[in-house]
Image 1 (spheres, rainbow, N blue to C red):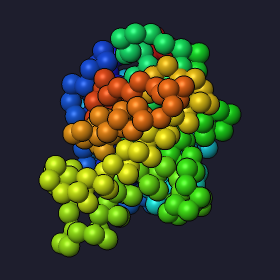
Image 2 (cartoon, rainbow, N blue to C red):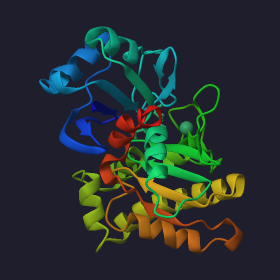
Image 3 (cartoon, protein in one colour):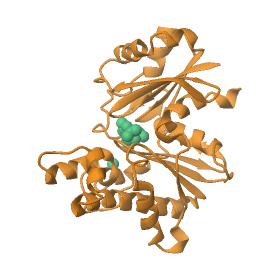
Image 4 (cartoon, helix red, strand yellow):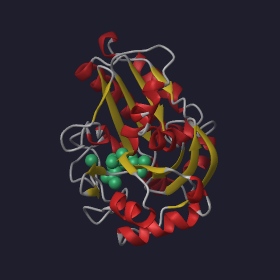
Length: 289
Ligand code: BMX
Ligand code: ZN
C-alpha cells in the first residue's frame, strides 16, 4: 500500500509518498493562502504530481481543529481557515481515493506512541513549531474528544498577565513558546531582524537570545508538568521545528527538573524527527490493516 501523506502546517506543507511506514519521496513548499478548499487541494495535488498514480489513499495531518465538516482554526494567526474548510471532501472528489484527516499533533501522537521503545499507557506529543500543538494518548488510545479539540494544549493559559493569543485568550503556552511568539519577541529586540535559526545560533554567545529561547522552553516545561498533574503521563514526546532545535529539549528537561518531583515527567525527542506529523498523516490507516 502506498499513501500520499500531507502535513499542513501554519508555515509549510510537507508531502510524501509513504510505503511500509517509510517516506520514500518527500517535498515541501510554503503553505498557500487559504481560499477555497478545491483550490487549496489542487495546489497540493499539483505538487504531488506523478506520486498520485502510485498512491492508494491519502492521509492528511493538519494544523487546526478537525471535525467531520472540515478544518477550522483555533488560532487564526497560525493559519486562517475559513471554517469549516472541507479539504478531505475536496481531495476525495478530485482523486476518487479514500482520504483520512486528523489534527497534525494528534496524528503524530498516535504514530509516536506506536514507536515508543518502552510501552506505556499515557503519553502526550507536543509540537513546538509555528504554533504549539498536542496529542494525548490515554490508556493506549488517542483521545481527541467528541469535537476533536482534545490535545490543544498550546491553549493552556499559563500566565494571566501574559501576551494575547490569537485564540482569544491571554497567556496561552502558544503565545509564549511557539516559533511565532519567539520571533515576535526577537523582532522587538534585534535590528536587523534575525530568524529563529539565527537566534538559536546566537544564543550560544548572547544572553538576550538565550533568555528568549529559555522563556519558551520554560513555558513548555510548565505545560509538561501541568499535563503530568492532570493525566499522570508516563512520557512526553517533543517534536516540531523549535522543539527539535539544538539544545531545546535539554532546556525543557532542565526546567522540569527544577519543579517538584511529583510533577516531573520524562521528555524525549520524536522518533519521526521533523517528519512526525507527516508519518502520522500516513499512519492513520494502519489500524485498519
Ligand atoms: C494551533 C492550532 C492547532 C495546531 C497547532 C500547531 C490552528 C490553525 N492550529 O494551536 O490545531 O495543532 O497550532 O500547529 O488553530 P502548527 O501549524 O504549528 O503545526
Ligand atoms: Zn490560545
